[in-house]
Image 1 (spheres, one colour):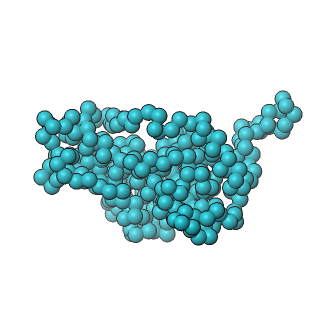
Image 2 (spheres, helix red, strand yellow):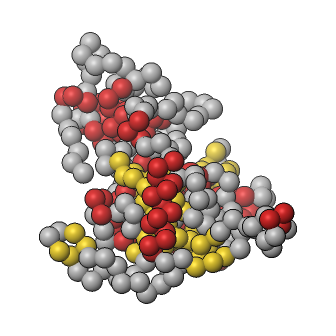
Image 3 (cartoon, rainbow, N blue to C red):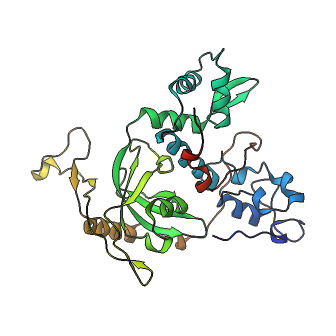
Length: 318
């Protein structure tokens, strides 16, 4: 994905429309910054960078931005990696989560603050959204699920996918960079291919589904004319199926849980095609920059980096 730099992203105001959601940027700058890891300040000149550095429209704390999604992937990857936080640091993070005293644990708090798992307010550590996600990742069981890509938006750098263990009808938005880097497929090859990933399937919102360990179900034998050959199936992912109604003579599921079954890649692709026909595509409605979710002044954030730089395995966590 190419990044554009230059005067088109810099005021004067007389030439470009102001962003309706922040006092610092133009509309086109925020639309671009929201969909890239560089945020707004990464698309301006050095002279104007400080003026937009705290823009909430592209901030890591603002739900739905590329920086927000990348930070969540980084936190989950860190929690699952060999470089995860030591038990003593996780214990301090749990103390912060429960509002308990952390006196005498300044070194651990400092490490957590550097990771942005806590933020310091008047010297007191407060749990951040990333810290909550980290704790949930280390404490909850993540389960494997079949995944299929419905469509990709290369302009926004995202894809809509079905995480079948979470919902057979509601799409989940995933960073295109994560999908391509973990599967080895290109953006043009992703749609319809049977994938598998791990996730916390107990979350309520689609945006809270964070995938890890995404892989192709099978093995790509090779490529012909730039496209991968069909897959040789070596894994049958576990997929949920709706319980049969007891009225019709089936067994049902009195606890409300979905029984597990296996499905091959062909049936996964057929199911995805049926859902794609029922789910409206992104092209049917214009893209709109949503107002930032914030209760106060624009937050101050550290610059977000691409996923390839932010892999938890390249950072020391202990």
